[in-house]
Image (cartoon, rainbow, N blue to C red):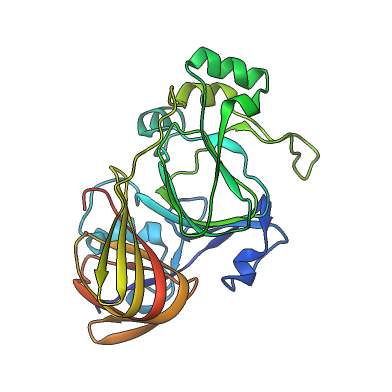
Length: 317
């Protein structure tokens, strides 16, 4: 049967996490400090499971390996995308991610381009996004001297904003921020600075200074996004970014919104409201916190209700 793939996924305990993944989205948390829900993932550190239909109980990595027709026979050894929701009760570490070339050589996996949709942010919240070093030598010196105020660029953020974080960008999500992150399927993170925090064993968390200096883009570059909006009836489709890694959109549904297939497959996450998805005359209830994939064989669909979805497609779509 031609139907969407609804997913159940993995929650990740984090030193900087909180309880919002339960209070806002209703997920049952396994610990006091939970920072990440790997909502759509085929990465071995947290694989999603299909909960409906013909492929109920199958893992997403298994479908990619054995049923590539679901993804229009797309190339690649691994499912390329990963969708997360992050609850930053405290600052994440200041970090940077490698590109594909460096990551494949040194870590054996994809690099990590990512982007953030700010679901919510408390008053005064900020992110670290970029740096002021003019050369790799100056970057190394500022890191080794701990001159964080001189090095790091801080930006205030608010609900509804969107940020693209290419590989090589020094960054950190600040406290009081809830985001949906779309990224390459990678778990390679190089910590530059971690506020001298200690883990449960009382040890300072590991830093990756050499790797961070190696992969940071010098000088820092702030991407200029060509964000466009299209009004369809009372609904709005926002095109946030198209990159070599993913395309990302916001679908703000007010009433009814119809689509025809534009990509080999589509990933969708409901971040606000509720409604219905109609595929092949079958209706599926959608609520906040629901995540699903529209496989290659779904060529048309409709959304009904009052809700907001963040949607991604693979590169080249």
